[in-house]
Length: 483
Ligand SMILES: Cc1cc2nc3c(=O)[nH]c(=O)nc-3n(C[C@H](O)[C@H](O)[C@H](O)COP(=O)(O)O)c2cc1C
Image 1: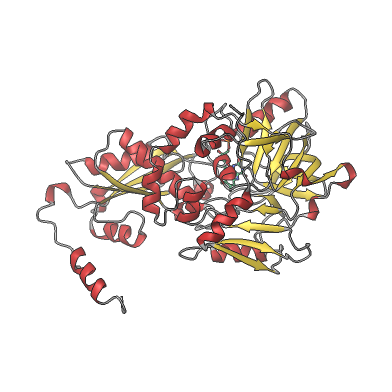
Image 2: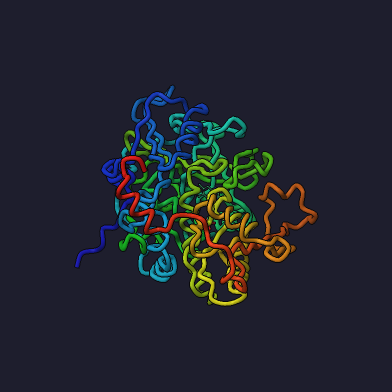
C-alpha cells in the first residue's frame, strides 16, 4: 500500500468550488489603504455576502491578491468544513452537532505527512532580499495601529521541551521590510510556548501562513486542546492528513500549497509597540502595547499569491458568521450533554461576537425547564466566557431572528421574575465594559432571560395574532408574484 499523499490545503482549489457556487466576486483597483477594509465591511453586512477577491490593488502588481469574507455564508462554510453544501444556517448547525467531538477523538490518527516540495516554494525571498512590503497588507480601519499582514493566518510554533507543534490564529502587524509583530494573548498556546523560550533565553521559531484553504485558519482560530496539533484536527475533518513541507530556517511544518509563508525568529527581549486593533465584539478594547517581534529570514510564496484577510470589526464582520455557527453547534451539544431535554435550536448571535448574546429555543416540558436551559446556556464550558445575555424562547420563536427573539422578550417576560442576574461571573479584560467594572479582576454580571410563556399559565396565555403556517403556505403558493 502506498503512503498517503495528504492534502496540501490549496486555497485555489477551494476558490474554484466557490466560483462554481456563484459566491465569488472579483474586485479590481481598490486601495490597500482603507478601501479593502471598508469594502469588505460593507459587503459582509449583506444578507448573503460573497467572498471578495481583490486584484490590481493600488501600488501592487496584478496577481498579488487579497481574499476576504471567505467563511461568511452557509454554503461556503459548509464546503470548508467538508459537510456538503448547506444553504441554511440551521441545517448547517444540525449537521455540525457532535462533529467537533468526533474530529477531536479522531485527530490522533491524522498526523501530517511531509512532502519533499510544494507550490509554496515557487518563489523565495531570503537574507537582504526579504521584503514584506512586496505584499498588499491592508490598513483595515482608520484607527488601527498599522497595516496588518496577518488576520486570516495560521501561526506555526513548536514547544520548547516537546515536539508539540501548535497552529494558532494570532494577528500579525507589519512593522517594516523584515519585521512583524505578533499579538498572542496570555494563556493562548502560542504564548505559552513563547514564554518557555524566553525563560530559557532562546530565540522562538515561528512560521506564519498568510493564506491556505480557509479550513486552516478556521481551525487554528478555535480552541483545539492543549498539546494537540491543529494539523491533526484538520486531517480528521478532511479524512486525510495535511501534506506539509518544512521551512528551511526553522524546520517548522506548513501546508505544501500555502500561498505565502514568513519564517523567522522572535529574539528574547525583542518587542515593539503593537496595535491597537479591533476585536471580535467590534471595539478597540486595548491600547497599543509591547508585543513580540518576529525577524523574518525567509519568505516563500506561490506565484500570484493570495493573502487571506479576516479583519475583526463591529459585527457582523468577516468571521462572525463562522463563529456563530461553530459556537451554536457546541452550545447545542453542551445543553444536551447537561441533560436539558427538547432543545429545538440554538443561536450564538453575531452581534455579540458569538459570545455575548446567545439564545436557545425549547419545547417546555416542566416548570423550571426554561430557567434550567438558560442557566446552563450561560454557564456551560463553551458558553461561560464573556456570556452576557442568555435568552430562552419557546419553539415557535426562531432563535436566530433577533426581531422574533426581542418580540418574545418584550411580550413574554415579567422582568421581576424572568430575569436572573448572576454576579461575579466569568468576564474578560477584553470586554469593552471592563472600564466600568467594579473589580480589578475580570468578573462580570450576566443576565438569564426566560422569554418563554409562563409554564404555569400556558393554557390561558393569549393566542398569537397571525396567520397559521398552513394559511401562509397556501397564500404564498397562490400569490407568489407579490409575496
Ligand atoms: C480572525 C481571528 C483573529 C484572531 N486574532 C487573535 C489575536 O490576535 N490574538 C489572540 O491571542 N487570539 C486571536 N484569535 C483567537 C485565537 O485564534 C483562538 O483563541 C485560538 O484558539 C488560538 O489558538 P490556540 O488555542 O492554539 O492558542 C483570533 C481568532 C480569529 C478567528
